Amino acid sequence: MLNNQKKLGIALVLTASVLLVAAFLAVPFGATSAVRTTLAIIGAVLLLCAAPIMWKDGIKRIKDEPRRKGSLLTMRQSGFFDFIVLLLIVATILAAMGVFGLITYNSTLSKHIALAGSNVKTLEEARLVPEFIEYNFKKDLNFVAASYGSFLLIATIIFVACVVSLVYMRFISPIVRADESLQRAHKIYRTTAQYAAAIVVVLLMLFPIYWMIISSFKTSDELLAAVPTLWPKEFIWSNYPDVLKKAPFDKYLINTLITTLVIMVGELTVGVMAAYGFSKGTFVGREFLFMLVLGALMVPIQVTFVPIYVFIARMNMIDTYAGIIVPNLVSAYFVFMLRQNFMAVDNSYIEAGKVDGMGRFGTIFHVLCPMCKPTLITVSIITFINGWNSYFWPKMISKTVASRTIAVGVQQLKNTFAGMEVSNYNEIMAGAVMAIVPIIALFLILQKYIMTGMSKAAMK
Figure 1 (cartoon, rainbow, N blue to C red):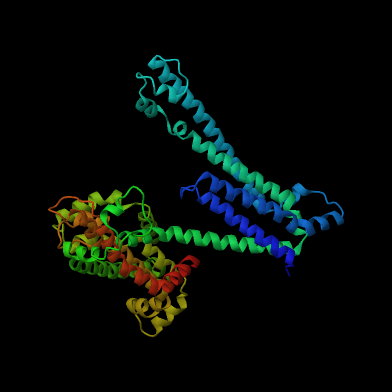
Figure 2 (spheres, rainbow, N blue to C red; figure 1 turned 120 degrees about the vertical axis):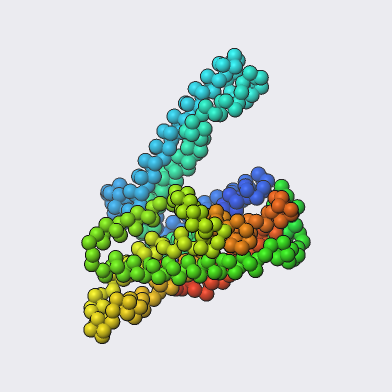
């Protein structure tokens, strides 16, 4: 159990951590240097006050116990020690690159200063010389020379973090091991840090969505202001009706639903059949053909879209549903995913199906598919989400409202005034909100199936 002394120390440490984080975050929020310095000093003082309170019992027990040898060996037995050594190697490499970049930077600067015929030594002084062309100087810098400051800064941060970690392992870790209540306190620190990190990650991931929703209620001038606002000065509810008037979102929605549902059915049908063949079928070249399927996962659409586009154009499928659907009827990833699940099904079930008179299709739809239901649901949901959010290929194929999907339609909101591009980003944000609402609702309702299907596929 934690005594009052340890509880006070934990409170001081957590308060100090909050103040230090606030001092760090005060920089991007434009707080004055006095505020940042005050927060940092108070946080450091609280940490110094908490240290003797938390470590008093552990230090006393270490003094009472006989002195042990092999501190370095104890440190090396920790798996974290090897990670620190790896970070030190990385920091050394980055520092070497930074030093090389600094030397290259100074050499290039000296060469350009000499060409300008001046005796100055720094870049600020060289800018005052008319003959010095800064554009040519920066163009001659390589990546390492142009970024030497970043390399040195990152190397310094990593090195300081490693030194602090080693000091902790050498001097503080023995104190923690000698005091069970201090171990409980450190467990509280770790749990708090994990929750704080999780909250920060969630906020970072949700901020773009929040910004999109809030921007959809702003005026165009407020959205384009030099200093962004996190909350609208006045909610403009008319942005949504204006979008519906300027763009045929009902047609975009119908087009998206048709193409997405057909693609989903096609990928499921082809994926199930191919997965059955690659998992339970026996034919010459099965493994080689499956390796070709896996190879297709490594080829991005930006590499293959030119021959596919030529094929679609020659088949007169431009600006049609077929042009959007046909190239997306097969997914190599889903074939692989379903094949892994089918392979985990014991062949005795298939043999039992044959005894009952089932053929191949009966075995697939009455034995394999029910046993792999979570994965099939996951594939269906992911296919629907990918089809709904697809932009690149529909943008290439759809030329008019007849086949334009909702993702392309949102982008077309820029051209709502006589075909001219305008800065109506508030209306574009409103259109984007309407486009993502169905997908978010679908994900929230069916997320448990996605997680189940993914976990089962990963364990096969």
